[in-house]
Length: 331
Image (tube, rainbow, N blue to C red; front, side, top):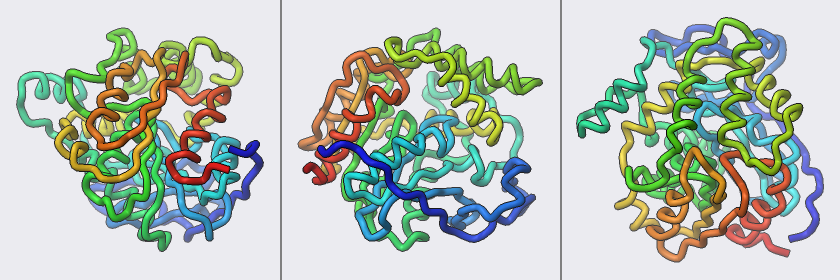
């Protein structure tokens, strides 16, 4: 792969429709963006915020975020680097985070949902991973993109796996990063990390409390050898200031719990797949990545030595090399 170079950020879409859309959907976009047009795509009843990088004539690479993480979780420099290998990169906010539609519903109860799963019962969910995958596919449709390479991290990995199973015609290749299959035997979190994750779903009174909670989680799950307190604080503050909705994160968690195992579907996937997972991941155990690669025919597994449950810049080159390999963009 050639050295990475900067791409071009292009913004598309119509100004958003602010405020209550109907009895079920509520836009909670923060005030500072209301003064400027934003790139918004209407996908059924959901408004999806998105940004693109690079040449739109190139093959598309859709980046799908994890639990509670916004589009900015994929940093501009990371997106530009991926676009430099000849891809038109798209990052976006899943429903219930960032500047996309947030669901207006009763506060979700994650522990009730978890108890239902453990008891083998049904989970009362506002939506599932299938709905999140349909949002992503609908965004591609709205952008006039017939099919795209897809990369997802953590919950985003679950979403792109679901896209490969349910809408394979929309998917060229899959890169599943620090994710798992939905089987309870694989990819389980360290209990301490699970407690940290639960903490960010609790409404905090002040901006500083919100930031400190996010930092505490990142310290638990992040890559130990690349910890940079100033960088982490700045990145957490960016997301807190952009949009803060712990109920949205909880609804996404319940969507994961309600969706169950993808093992049977993954065994039928006939698409090129790259699986990346760090051996220092405490939130999604590496067994989840290994199992994903085991289930998908001819999938390639690449171990990211020392990487935790984040995407630090020190690993961008290796991630980019993997994307270049699976998408056929190696030089």
